[in-house]
Length: 373
Image (cartoon, rainbow, N blue to C red; front, side):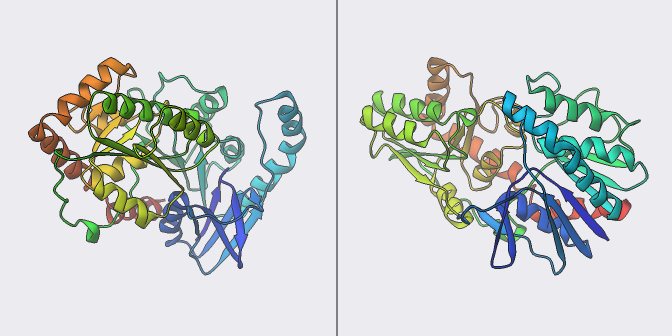
């Protein structure tokens, strides 16, 4: 089977291998197990490989480089108009040669893929919508357009669309799904975590305004000012890093807040194991991997109620849903921090839930979809 991936994720070539963001590549390597040939249509950059990049593992890979584009400015829109016909033709040719078409959405390339796939109604197709599928959420018009096309069973045929969460009014081709990081073999006992010494918080994600890392820092800052012995470690990088470092310096948070940058999977695993809470006050999410990963290792999650997060946390039974109000959120956290039994109950419920979603379960679901197509 020739398995085609259409994605906006930027790739790089290093020592004759193609690398990209690890969580994405690790997932695609599972899909690729059931393909005789892997065709990837994506932008190719010339950046340096980092700790969060992984390579495809497949004996036969064909990479088709396409230009990236955006519609965020007048200049970008003009370039998009010029580039779109060529990119669309490249996508069309790749789809024509494939046995199974797989779209990664939302994204600009994914939007073109949504449009071009209409020309192949009989070919088996899947789409992974990794963003927020909540129909009530405020999103860019390009995201709404992709969701509309994917949900339209007249335009989009023979396709299973994987989304995070169950949403009322979904069409028959929409399938609630999940993602996974750890295997069954990694289900080692949860380390005992007591709240009598330093209370450790961990943030894992891009340091960008959308992930709201400053709010996480300010929550821990207020707990520190109230006399709690706390520490927040942030893993990730992004354009807000310098601003966050400046804020920590200006507010004398050195030692209380530590920024570690991008780190590999093993380092993050150890961080989760040694932390009490995983925090992600994000403005928008699909399936927040950092929350699911932290729960797997016994962190009590603290997150905003976006996308499927309320389901993941079973409202507040498996964690703490933020109101994005400092006074209310600090009160919620203090309620857990000051009661070891409440913490323990949430920790156990969180870990038990997260450990249902292992790589083996994930792969089995993918295998069933591909064999049925």
